[in-house]
Amino acid sequence: MTQAAPILWHFRVSHYNEKVRWALDFKGWPHIRKTQIPGFHVPVARWVSGQNMLPIIKLDGQVLAGSNHILQELERRRPEPRLFPQDTEKLKRALVIQAYFDEQVAPDLRRLFWSTYISDAARCALMATDGSSPATRVVWQSLFPLMRPLFKKNMGIFPGKLAAARSRMMGHFERLEREIGPSGFLVGDQFTVADLTAAAVMTAIIRPPEFPYPLPEPWPEELIVLRQSVESQPAFQWVLDIYAKHRSSSQEIVE
Image 1 (cartoon, helix red, strand yellow):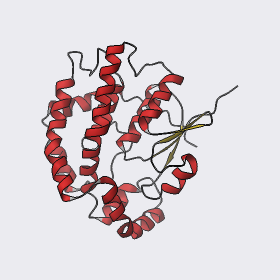
Image 2 (spheres, one colour):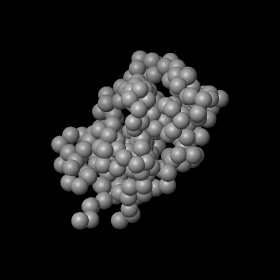
Image 3 (cartoon, rainbow, N blue to C red):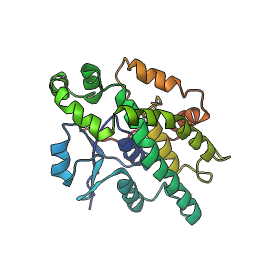
Image 4 (cartoon, rainbow, N blue to C red):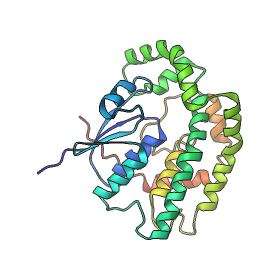
């Protein structure tokens, strides 16, 4: 019996969503992507999964939400090529690194990324609705003054939290540098979920050429300055190298 292709509801811009896209592409798993627009996605997400967050995937009728939950299920259903080490100690290390980047780094970098857009409704609309129709962009922009407080609250875009995120950013890059092993990978001598997670999360600031959805030009000056502030870090180059060598070609089924 032929299995239906997975259906992925995702945000183009998000690094959490990038983790799942990358895993599907890495495993050579053809899938359908349904791009959602931040803010406008809520009714769809609730209808599909009963909650508000993306990414969401449908696998053979089973609906899963949350990038880590999805990655684990993808690995269970299609273990090769592997993302999760079979060795117990290596798996433990990979999961510790994954948790750090998901729980500590990702919120800081997402907060900083959105802070460079949030005050400019037109630029924010261009970024958030990239790939959608001009009419959708106009509607989103017209509603953004009402949505802006919700975005700020959801992402913690407040002066104190932004200052704390900026103060921690260099430490995140230095932590990544300390984790890189002699092989160039974070765990053992193979690409794993640790490398995928760390590199995907860092795309909030770095945006490698292989990231599947480039940001609309021109970028906010604040984002350019933020990126330039870490360009000299070895971790910055590591992310570029990981993307260049291991970001597999898209397995999206274009409907």
